[in-house]
Length: 225
Image (cartoon, rainbow, N blue to C red; front, side):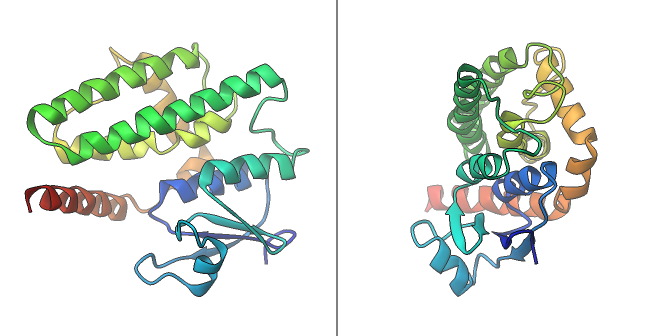
């Protein structure tokens, strides 16, 4: 059983669940992991997240919290004496939240546009994605991580990019990130993938790749129907 009744409902293929795992592991919090079959969701998951009916859901002392970014902030506040994920300074905290939201609204949505489009629309989506990454790169300011010398909140929220963007590049046959145009992002990707916690928690990449190929095929099939 997890520390203080901490239970995480997740799925190994979800980058959003991985955010919560990283937050828990960085703080050294023990937890029970419940792997959900998203095609046959458990009654517990539906009870704990009746609105979206999706993972991740963190249950702490019987109380459920949904939505990955919300959960990560909850973890940081609930165990504030352990490994801080957000700055304590109000301005720095607000800035961190701003960039995390930028990752969600621009980079995450942009990556789906790239994966789900073809032809000229796809090339346009790739260019927009590259522009968003260039803007995000400005927040690195030659730091090792967005959190400085250690992984922080923005790194956790953006942590899907090093692995998932590489897979998107392979699936569509177009390079999104290159070291010449995005040197700081490229270095950040290497540093994040070299981190022991990241290595230990990354899901089986072949399964993730198959899942992403299926997403693209389903979207393209729906578009042509």
